[in-house]
Image: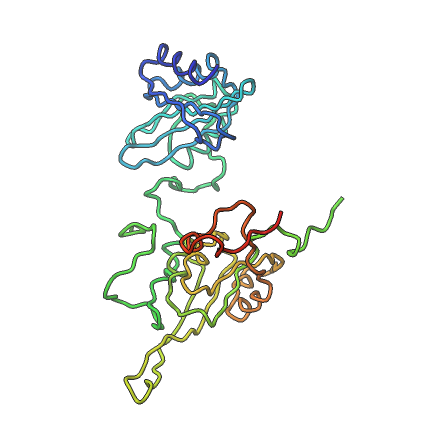
Amino acid sequence: MTPGEILAEAGRRLPGARCAAETGVAGAAGTAETVTMDVPRRDWLAALGFARDVAGCDFFDWLTAVDEQDEGFAIVVHLYSLGSGQHLLVRTLVPREDPALPSATGLFRGAGWAERETHEMFGVVFDGHPGLAPLLLPDGFEGHPLRKDFPLAARAAQEWPGAREPGEREAPERSRRRLVPPGVPEGWPPP
Amino acid sequence: MTEIGPGADSLPPRSRGVIGLLEENCTVCMLCARECPDWCIYIESHKQALPGPGGGRPRVRNVLDRFAIDFSLCMYCGICIEACPYDALFWSPEFGYPEADITGLTHERDRLREWMSTVPPPPGHDAGAPLPREAQAAGPGTGPAPEPG
């Protein structure tokens, strides 16, 4: 299916989805257009089934999450058509208070490991997954390290080397202007 | 069959092997240490007052006491080299500096200085590349000649 055909068919079958065709998304080679589908949570499996059976994107590449903070977690799946070379991104948003989504393992068996990893890293629960055990983290690890509110131990244990002023031997106790490492939010890490 | 990989001299231009420090150019401005996303550049310095010219007000300058890069943390992003306004940091293609002890990967200023001898001259412009903005502003015929081929 061409991107245009996928968009037309998705508009007919998935009225809740917002679809677009963009170039240069997901590292797609050359100028191939990637189709993106943003669907509500209740349409998740329907959208993945549409992508596999109607759009022909039957190769499961990866699944992961993005911590969108107040908006919740975005779950992203990248699918690919081995036949036509079409790339497809399916995305949905789950709320922070209830980060649950039906498992895609019934449609793509290869989603099992990706969902286990997303579960341990972001705390997203995939209902119906056959064994949602941690995949990479050591036994007894607490917390979800890829959530943005997860304190980075290395940043708490080490003093920021940039806190010193030029020509000062020690980092100032109370600097005139407080320097904050770039990219580290105020009050980080949380106590 | 195991083969010995290429040496640093056969790598493509702009290969990132290790970072060299040209200490004379360093003004201890701390920009590299502050921009480093990995927090792996350690700089210590002190202020030194020099008598002003002709008995004028003394001039205070910063003297570098320690400059170290911890290559066990470095992710070779090159932001420090980009950030340095005084051209004190350079890429070298040398990559052969393994250590049995991880603390040995913290290269102090003398070791960073030694890498400077391995820094290649900057490569010429690619064929067909647009002229640098400065040369464009100066007009035709003033820019560097592109590399042949």
